[in-house]
Amino acid sequence: MNAQSPIEAANALDTNAMAQETTLLNPRFYTTDFDEMDKIDVSPVREEWDRLIAQMRSDPNKNHFKKTADWDEVDWENMEPGLKAEAIDFLVSSLTAEFSGCVLYKEMKRRGTNKDICELFGFMSRDEARHAGFINDALREAGIGVNLGFLTKAKKYTYFKPKFIYYATYLSEKIGYARYITIYRHLEKHPEYRFHPIFKWFKEWCNDEFSHGEAFALLMKTDPKLTSGRNKLWIKFFLVAVFGTMWVRDHARHRFHDALGIDIDWYDQEVFRKTTEISKQIFPLELDMENPRWRRGLEKLNDAFVAMEKAHKRGGIAGRIGKTLAGARAGLAFAGLYLIPSKSSTPPADPRLVPAY
Ligand SMILES: [Fe+2]
Ligand SMILES: [Fe+2]
Image 1: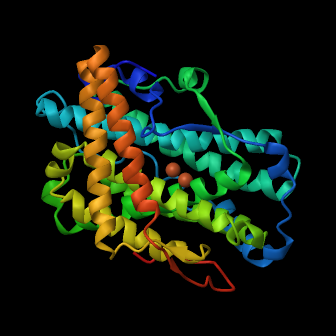
Image 2: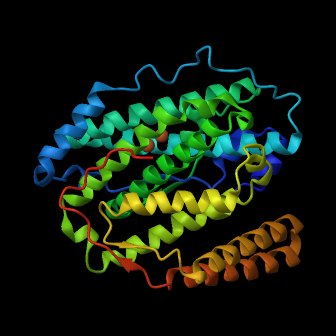
Image 3: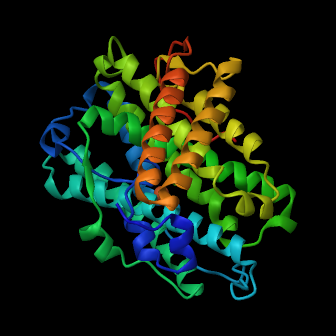
């Protein structure tokens, strides 16, 4: 783990350190059992599969990730330093998340022999490489950039069984779609808050993430065991983990959201609502976000992370003790969220959806 906090690192403009940092909250790099994934047989969903692959092959966003006349100049130099640090933190963590997908998908394509799987992962890594490259271009304008080759080697990889990759990646693609489209629609109504041009690119961009999510929904559909029995407990775990992480991460970026004119509480709940609605295409349960314990639990989780960060900064023995105590509080808050009874739902026979927001 890197000793700097993301904000300190941004201040030092040490973006490689930021991107490399592996904490519970930062986007991670994954590795998995590629041989097992290579054995997936998509015949049960062949029709929907071929349609999705044909759409990916047509490459609707081929020319989208290029700067055009719409790309306005950003005055990084005169940006309020707090906002600048959070904007850079946002860009670096988005870049890391995009690139993490790229690396995982490319590795699957490289190691696989299954034509369907290799084709899909080839298209998805193509998209994520574009996304990451585009963000890196934006960072370069701020006089910084993340060395992606270095990151591939330096970042720690977390091993996840294929089924956990499906749950986590499916959710991160769909929540990525919901995040990007919610910001895009908000700025469509309030262009005066668009302090960086990259947000103009989010509409087509999020359609890529939407399709990637569709692919994982179909992969899960090939094996009903993945979304039934004890695996429902895992699905719930990933829902709570992904939503909880987003809540804590966004609440550490007040200046960034203020500049966008976005109320973080509203934004996060709105993204959760969209993601939940979409995930009913494949998940047999949804979190009960109307339960008052949900909101309270998220706040407790955030308080614990804020305390952890404070203790980390204090350092020394007191800092270490404080960090352990805050860590225990975060664990309890997480368990509290997990224990809220979920609502069951019945996924439709045909899981395919189109972007509707
Ligand atoms: Fe992406
Ligand atoms: Fe994606």
